Length: 205
Image (cartoon, rainbow, N blue to C red; front, side):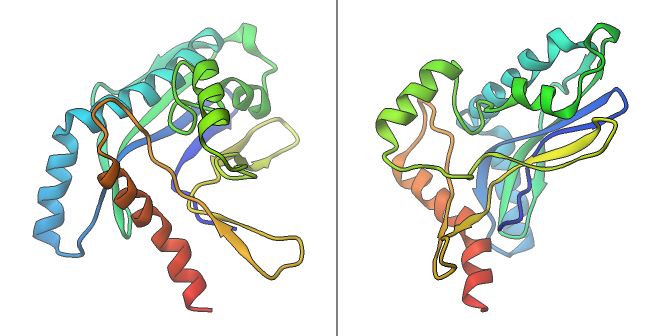
């Protein structure tokens, strides 16, 4: 169960959209303060570096399949209820030679992106297997729908939890992108902010 903000890929006929989220700051609930924080996020070299890795991984995956690709030069700040993210909407048009590609073909190229795995992908996956110490289960996996024509929409399972088979407990997940400029205490605080939507929903019930 969950409510993810991140679109892995949407395919409508030959039009592809992917929303990349990487680089995060917690909101305070005070409009003026949050506006200043949004500005600092947009200028943060650490967060911009993290975001660029994620955007580049999406662009690299789509380029061989597409006849046109649009990647905005700078991200925008996406405001959610408790955090703000750097966001980039990547759009593309499938090349004729890529048809009949369906959304699962695209997902297999895009996932896992640098936003949830790291880069270079193979090295990052090995490092995660060695260091992370837990099974992610369905966390950060694709979730969505597909129609009979192969079009559809898949999101990344973030801001989510996995209910145990007996239905008596749930494990909730959050993660952060780690780059050279990351500070452990700030990354931990970011992960706690990302857990808030699920924790709040569970506490209400």
